[in-house]
Every structure is written in C-alpha cells, then in structure tokens.
Image (cartoon, rainbow, N blue to C red; front, side, top):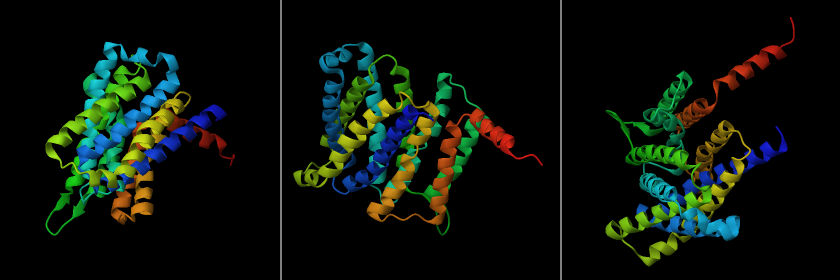
Length: 310
C-alpha cells in the first residue's frame, strides 16, 4: 500500500471514528430536546461550518455551484431523505430500548440495503450480496429481538432506527445519481440546509421549545454539527479521492463498532453476549456485501501458493 492510499484510509478511519462517537452525542441530546428540535440545531451548526469550508475551498468561485437546476433537485431530494433518516434515527435513540451502540449497527444496515434498493433502479447484484443480507439479518435479529415470557419483541426504538436505515440507503442512491453533476461541498451544504429548515418547521409545530433545553443540548449539537457533519464529511471527500471504493465502504462501516465502544466508554452502556454476537454478524454481513469476491479468491490463491511444498 502506497503512502497516498494509506493516508486516504487513515482519513476515512478518522471519519468513521467521528461518526461513531456522534451516536453518543445524539443520545445525550435526546435527553433534553425532541428529535426535530435537536436535529434543527445540529444541522444548523453543520450548515454554518460547511459554508465556511466552502468559501475557503472554492474561494471566489463558491457561488457558481448554486446556480444549476441539478443542485436544486439534488439538495431537495437528498435533504428530504436526510431529514427523514435523521428524524427516525434520533427518535429511536431517544427511546429507552435503543442505545448508541445498537443504533450504530442497525443504521449500518444501509450498507446492505443500498444494493438491494438499487435493484429497483436496474442495478445488478449477486449471490455474495444475498449472503451478506442473510448474515446481517440474523445479526439484527440477535441484536434487536429480546426474549420475553411468551414472545419475542423488538424495541420501538430499534424499529425506528431500522426504518431510518432505509432512508439512509435512499439518501446514498440520490447522492450517487447527482454526484457527477454538482459539486460535493455545494450539495452537502444544500442538503444540510434543507434538513435543518424542515426540522425546525416540524419542531415548531409539534415540540416544546424551551431555551433551557437548548442550552443543555448545546455541546452535543455543536459536536455533531461541526465534527460529524462538517469536518467528517470534508475528510470523507478528501479520503475517497485516492482510496478504493470497496476499502472506503468497509472502513466507514467501522462507525458502528466505534458507536458500541463509545457507548460503553462514555455512557457505560452494556450489551449482552447475544447482542454482541448480533453486532459481530451484522458487521460481517456489511463487509461481505461490500468486498468483491475476486479479492477473497485472490487471498485464498495467495495463501495456497505460499504453502511450503510437502
């Protein structure tokens, strides 16, 4: 591995660490604000930070990217799915049945859902993809379904985060459609702004707005807006320029692992052996669904060739 690829992978690993720790910040924010108000706050912080990065990055040409119809379409569609995914995820994390670790892994299912939903758009899949889906599904069952006296029941928060994963998958497909038509930073700012506005509008209608609550949730919202939204997204853009897309997706899937570790370290969240087993299976399913089968064959071939003669 050359230095450029190593540097790119380190940037992507840093991105996954920032995102994984963000699940803890969401848990802390849910203690003080409703999901829409908290999302409105963190995405507003993110929009301001992205605007600053955009001005520095593009300098005098920053306004050019806002003048195309594709940017408007991309910002509105991506912002809508970003709003729905964030709302379901934040509402799920706020439920007692779901902590940051579980939320991170269930959200990570979008890695598997993207190619499945892509079938409706004419994208191809293979047996390896279906194997990854099967493994991840078993892992989700172990992670989310808890044994009761008479039946197995999934937590309300787990269910909300699970539906949110479909929105994140749809968001990825929208980004994929417009990624070559508009500037990445311009699209990031547009979608984040749309999400912030939608969150504030819904919050004003259905959630209490108290200044004391906003002050209590200030630091978690600031971390998510500045680090998870602005800094991590910029690092992702830089890192994916030289990184192999398969390597990038696997490294970014590590955010789920970081979410579990951060929940244990900061919030003293504990997972049972059954739930940890579910996490492991879900992660294996995510990796299997993204790792090209030719890499697996190549690795087996190399091992066979490296064996000493008998």
